[in-house]
Structure formats: C-alpha cells, structure tokens
Length: 550
Image (cartoon, rainbow, N blue to C red; front, side, top):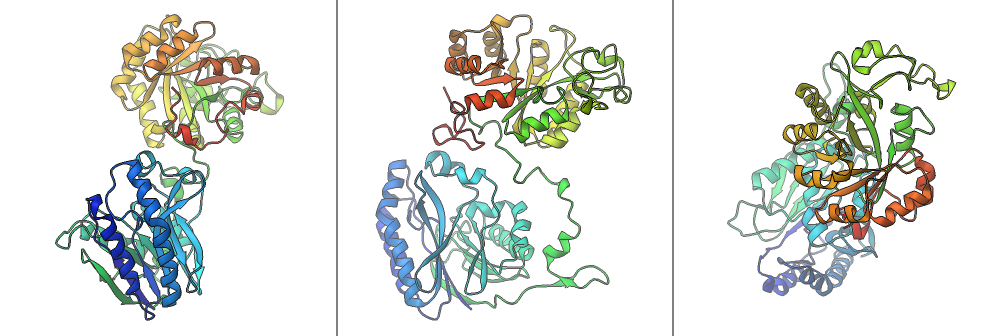
C-alpha cells in the first residue's frame, strides 16, 4: 500500500492565505494513481494565521467548500482514499473535523477532534459540546481496513491509546497542526502511539520553516514503533510503502504465546489505579452550567441523610451537585453526619467527636427512616470520594463546634489530601460559616473554591465573602434579598440558597437570580424546574459555556 503524506508551509501572515491555499490545490493535482492513501494536515481551510473571529469565519467561507471538493475529486481521480481536516457546520456551530473520502470520491465518514484546545473553544467558538459526552473511538472500515483517528492535541492524551487499541485499528490517521514541540518529541509520541496500538500511524502536519526543528513532523510509523518516513520540516509530499496486514507481536512473558503489546498489558490492567474517567464522569464545576439544584444531604427523602444510598439516588437521577457535612472523630477520621450529636440519626448517644470511627460503625444510622435501612453504617469522607469522585459537584460543609475557633490543621490537611488523592479538585468546594476556618482553608488550599455560610453574621455573607476573597455565598432562609444577590454577582460571587423543597419557592428564587438551590426533595423540585435549569443536561449550553450567568 502506497501512502502519501502532504506537508504545506504555514505562514503567520494572513496575506499569504490565497497563495498557501492555491499550493494545497496544486499539490493535490500532483497526486497520481500510484497512491492508495493520501493524508493532509489539520485546518486546510485556514492556511495561514487568523487573529480575529471574523477572519476565521472569512477563511472558512472562502476555502472550505473548495478544498473539500478538491479532496473528493482527487480521491476519485487517483482511486485513492483521502483524509483531510477542515471545518464542518454542525448546525449549531463549526467543528474541527477530519473527513474520509473513498476511491469514488464519496464522503464516507468523519472524525470530530475529541480534545479541542481552549483557543478553539473560547476564541474561535467552535462547537465542542460533543466533547463533553461519552464516546468510543471512531472506527471507519474502508476497503477492509480499520481506521482510527487523532487530531493534533489528541496525541497528548495517552490514556486514550489503550481504548483505541481495544478497537484493533490497522491505521491511525493523525491530521495535525503542531507548532510547538520538537521533531524528536513528535516522533517519540507517534512511535509510542503505534507501539501501543499495534497500528500504523500516518501523520500529516504543517511546516513553519524548512530549517526549523519545531512543529511539522509529518511521518509514517510502523506497529513495532519504527519510523518509516519523517518529513521533519520539508515542504511538499512524500510517499512510503506499508503493509497494513503486518502487525508486531512479542513474547508475552515466560511460556506465554506472542501477543501485541496492548494485549500483554490488558491482561494485567488495574483501571482503578488510574484517574477517574469514563461515561459516568460529569463536567467539572467551572464548566457546569448555572442555575443548578443541589441535593441537600443527598436525596434524603428517599434514603437516610448523609448516606451512600442518599448520594447515589441523587447522582443516578442526574443531580449536578450534592451537599454533605463533615466532622472529625475522636481518632482523627472524617465522617459525614449533620448533627454534632448522634441521637437523631442513629441509635447512638453523645457527640460524634467522643467516638472513634470503629465505635461509630457499631451504631445503626438507618434508625427511624425505614426498616429496610436498618444496619446502615456511618459513611466516611473517603467512602464518598471513592464512590462519587468526578461524578457530581460536592458542596462540602466543614462542621465546627462553634463559629469562632479554628480547626486542627492536620484534620483540614487530611481533607485536602483526600480530595487530591481521588482527583476531585475540580469537583468540590468548601462551605462553612466559621470565618476563621474559611481563612485557614484559603491558606492551606487556595486552589479550592470556598463558599461563605451564614455563621454568626448571616446578613453579611456577601461582605464577608468579598473580604475573604471567596467565590461563593450560601444564603440562609430570610437572610437575603435581590440587592444582596446583585451585590454578590457584581463581584463575581455565586449565590446558593439553603433550602427550598417547595417548587413555587424554588421558582421565585431562580427568578431572583439564585445560582444554586439546595433541596431535600431533589426529584420533585427538579421536575418542576426543568424548563428553568438551562437544558437540564450535564453539557454546558452554547450561551453558557463557562457557566457564566451574570
């Protein structure tokens, strides 16, 4: 199989756009019937640097349809499969898209870049909503060969390589626009990809300058990790012969039959050792839309409050946020219970801090709710993180014996450390009415968001949040007004309200500008407010991509 990779020159001067685009058109005319596969780089319809959104859209209008027509025509004329990257209008915005044309010139599939850069999302305003949803690697089968895809920035997310390998591709198409890494680094990544997927990697990029060691790196790499062709920064097209049926197999340990590298790895995989990932992962706090509902102490009208069943019910029903309370035990462990005393929610007596964790586990925390929950044990902070890290936003109420004394720093550091261990930093914020503890948290964990609670001055939560540099406030019952909400919003501060179980009351709160409503009856309130809670899904709305409301 004869592969052709095309590497154009790229200019930072927009005035060169027409000349560079014509070069792309001319180079396709030079392709011939000896070529079985032709691959072009990313952004062929934006051939030079554009600095404004208007210039970007102008380039799309001028070049997109023409370059795609030329790719189709080339595929038909050369009887080749052609892969080319250009923009695609999804109906709600443009997407970074790799197109596949078969030997008859028909568009037979496309791949949307799975990791659009921040510049693409927020400056060029590309449609990226699909990238926040679960998806499996795109596989196109053409003429008996299985193709998978990565586009430029996608190459950096090595954790996805094992998932691609699982789909057993023959060839991975990499349309790229690399302009920062060295040739050596680009080749290292491409070889690593090929070796880990047992597939040929065919990568096309752009040249900044033929003397440059940065960017470019259009290449062909075999499944054993050997580089068959590397254009480095040369401009033009070059060809390479490959045998897609030729795979690489190695001894899989003593006495075992030969296997592909990914097969050898797969038999010993321990996925729970990795960062949280997969279909159940929701958006982090800074991307999730407002307004929201927060399931207060979990969905505690269907299961005992501050319990795994209550949290699980809320999360499974789509609650974007849960709230829970933390106390320190006698032996320095961290448990979730609202009251300082055990009597109301368990068959124990006395204060939570008078018992060790093992002693607390002997009490029945299903008491008084429903006999089905008899035997329910107290839940630890570690339990909550273990089950729900990155599955929901967590409003963590740090409980204190009063609102004027600090907490043991080792205890606070343990909470912060667990959040880090379970990779949950983008999914949590701290809430407390104790300003001394709030200031402790600001010093110990300045990277984590803080929410000021009522405390001893519920009418001054906004002023206190401004003074302490906190990102959120949590209003309590009557201690709020529209003017206070507007004051908070004018300082970029989000507003929670505790709490509303009546749908009419919740509606009024949203109309006043409350960002997050805590509720004990999640499903009933969510059903009543579904038309007001943005689109009701976990994907940020187009006009609310960064969760901005005010």
